[in-house]
Each structure stands twice: as structure tokens, then as C-alpha cells.
Amino acid sequence: MLIEQIEHRWLAAFRRTLELCALRHGDVVGIVTESQSRPVNVALAELAVQSLGATPVRIQVPTPALAAPAPVRSTGASDALRHLAPVLAALSRCQLVLDCTVEGLLHAPELPQILRGADGVVPRMLMISNEHPEILERCQPDPSLETTVRAAMKRLRGAREMRVHSAAGTELRIGLAEARVGGVWGFCNKPGQVSHWPGGLCLAFPAGRQVNGTLVLAPGDVNLTFKTYLRDNVVCHIEDDYIVAVEGQGVDADMMRGYYQAWATSTCRCETARFRSTAATRSRPARWWRWPHERRRDHAAPRQRHRRAGLGRRAGGSGDAAWHRRRQGRLAGAGPGPGAGRLPRRRVGHARLWRQCPDRPL
Image (cartoon, rainbow, N blue to C red; front, top):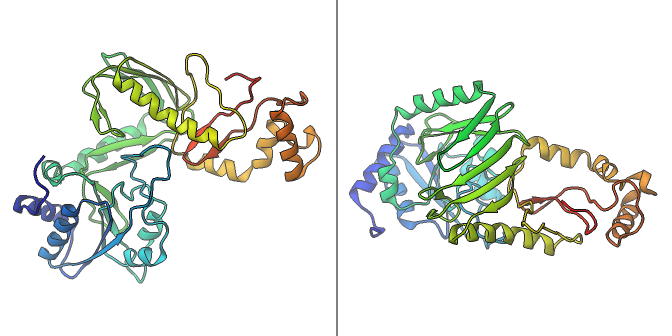
């Protein structure tokens, strides 16, 4: 790997990218970083901003401690800002925000507040991936990417289903009805726009229970979480958006199973109900995100969920205290009753798992 220092060609790459972002003389650019950000990228961004006559304002926050049971990478959901009001107030008043955090703010909860702007200013944000500048130089944005990505987004919006086949054995079906479609081309030149560098990506976020089939990861594929190329086949069986089984021999399959197990084990420590997987380890692993309509359902109708599970009024009594008494009785194997032996599905941290009592298999 090349030494991480200021190089003229890397500075030129940053400058060309900022020119595509329509950075003008006199603009104020917020450069948000954290203590574990690559210093060379932060320095290159600052110098490139000044070379175009704009004013950089660097805001650095400490990198937070790991809150998950295992390292999480390539999420675009940094938790470094932690809703700090002074930081958000400053960023919302910048014409351009350069995101140099480790994970990026693309899916961070603070992003909408930043993009709302303040005092008549509506920022745009460019997320600069926390990669070596030599990689960023090789992946410089191309102005023609915008047309290509927009055409691909149009195709995705007009499709009802995506089918993925591969010579390795992948047979995957993805329903695209009501899917959220997006795309980035590596630069942002309009207020309120968000992009990331490298760019050239078109994607769809399907609605719930729309992904089914078999995904075979073959040698040469990339595992973004581990930042490695695969050396062996790993077979993932997917049912209603969940990986329900991982098959394969070798280090790659073992690492993937161990990673999922770390989430399941951590969740089980916080649960009263015992998590049990089948002999074939067909446990339901964590899914680290939820769709907006799922969040609304969880917060708007907890009582209906309890009744469907046999834990509402028909199970005897009402109110939170009665609910907990009945819950403890079920866990101890007391009383049949409607829905006995199964607890409602609930969210724990980043994971959503199906919980069950010992007398009810998956």
C-alpha cells in the first residue's frame, strides 16, 4: 500500500470532484470527521476546498465505542454525531458538507436535519468513502455517470421483479413492487442532494418479505463487511428477507456463520426467552435495518401484536403488569391458551429475531 501523504495527483482528484459538485468561490464547506478518519483524506479535502476559493470548516468528533456485538462495516450509518446540536447547527448552515466519517452519514439519523438547512441555506452532501486516496483517484466521478444511473433507475422503477442467476448456482427472486429506488453518480451539484464518492450505483430497497431464494457467493466475490475477496463457495438460503441457513466449508463460511452467531448470542443474553436453533443451525440471523412501514407498525399497534400472540385481554387480565405476569407464566410452561409458547417478534438493538419458547420449534 502506498504511503498516506499529500500527493499532487490525489489533490487534483479531490479538486476535480469538488468542481463537479459546483463548489463556488466564497462557499462555506463543512468537513465532518471523527478521530478514526483517514487524516490524509481530511487534509486533501481541506486543501482542495481552499484551492477553489471556498472556506473549509473542519468539525471533528470522537469515534464512539463499538456498541454492536461485532464490528459493522460499509453501512453508511455512522453514529459518530450522536445528535450533537451544535454540530448539526453548524453543518446545516454550510453550502456543501464533505462527509469524511468512517462509516458515512448516508443513512445516519441526523442526515435529514442537516439537509433541511438553516438561515436560507440548503446544504448538499458528498460522502467521501474512508478509503486510501489512491482508490479514490482510480474511481473519480465521471459526468456521464449521471445519465447512465438515471436510466438504470428508470428501468428499476418500471420492473415488477428482479431475478438473479449465476453459473455458481444463485437463484434469487426479488419483488420490486413498492420498492424504493435510488442511485448515485459520485457528485452532488444541487441543494439538498446527497451522493458518495466512489459513485456509479443504482439500487432498490424492496418492501418486506420480497427476497427469496439461494445466493451463492463464489471465489472472487467481495465480502464488504470483512473487506476481503472470497476464496470458497458460501451458500446462503434466504426466506422472506432473512438468511435462514449458511452452507459451505472453509474459512469464509466459518467466518460468516460466526459473525451471525455473534449477533444471535448477544441478543439471547438480553432475552428471557431461550433462543434455540435447529440441528442444521437454521436460526434466523439478525437483519440490521427495517423499512419505514415496519417501524410504524411496531410503534403504532403494540397491543394488537400482543393479542395476536395470545397475550392480550383474552389471555386473562390487562395492563402492563398483567402482561408481564402472563409472559413469565408462559416462559415457565404455564397454561395452554391462545398463542401459548410463542412470544411476539420484537426489536433488540440492530437485530430482529424470531423468539420462541422451548416447546415451540422454528
